[in-house]
Image (cartoon, helix red, strand yellow):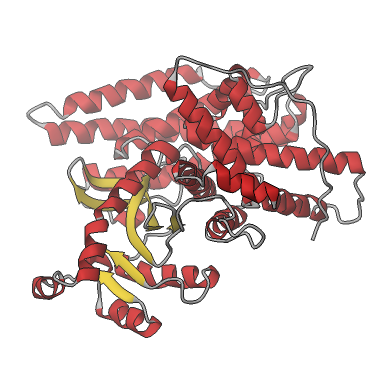
Length: 501
């Protein structure tokens, strides 16, 4: 394990005292408390330690100087704090960089304030901070935070995080939701427009850098496809709507074939003659990957539109292309008002009584039923919670089944799941413990709303499953810090006793 070098304190400007805005004062108090939680819980130290280990492992033979290592440790701590603050503010990378430049409080929290100058990370640097550690390592940070929240300092007898009330982990409540992807509604023929736009813009970029094959201007194809899209919308309002839509789709298919041919020729030209441009190979690779990703999916998109519009045959959800740019997405039937069907990934969530998220999992493949998600969650919880801490599990009727009832009984856990049968529910609802768990269960719906709306963002702006899963983990960490910061802290007299001891 890498040895962390103790960092010497630096001269930093004093934060100005702001009066007249109670919301700012509350937020400042929350940030100061989160700063304290990161240090007292050991989350920041663990993040720096894991970051340093990964940095040294990339080049085992290289021995960094003390200056290089201390600089990397400071940058790692800055990465952690920037990610937490970004989730608290709900900003994208560009907006976060601007907010850091504007606010002295944010500069202090992220550790970028200096006496001589303030150098804030750019949007590109913030994007690198987002991927500073893999998702499994961020999950370990959340577990460390939860563990520290229930530990007692042996010397003072107070909670390690100075929480006035003990953290309760005897009962967890489970639920699942959909993390919607950042895509437009997946209309079949609109995929052809998306493909044309991407291929022709990439082709125009290649031609602008001096590599050309004989063809009309790429803008003509964009204009022609937009005209066909308008015609498709108008065709749906005609008396012979089906016939008109089929006719328009045939025109779109012919146009897509021509676009594909031009894009492929320019793609091959860039692949063999990229040295004649002012691009580096990495830049050329970005354009090649953009074209290849669409060319590989375009035949399937055409076939999908043909089957549904011309053939009038349904396409199985597993075979549908929902987006040309986002893989690993699924059609999730929610059956709720305003969200009968959503497109994205299923997120499983488990929280404890005070609202801390203690377990979560974002499914890459199509998620199993809720009842089949419970055993995996119990296994994850029991792998890091001390034995005997977890005593009961609550959830809606989707988690109830014969196998789960047997599993909970075997593990010695109280079954607080809502039964599917009405008779069984009537029998159990008079039980004091069961009734208490079920009355608390609707709050988990609110917790999901808070996490999705205030921390994940709607939609979650992360491309690819790995980045979406990492974004969920960062959001859970920021959410849990926010929840702990709002919990009552021990009185100042107790802290003075600790300092005196």
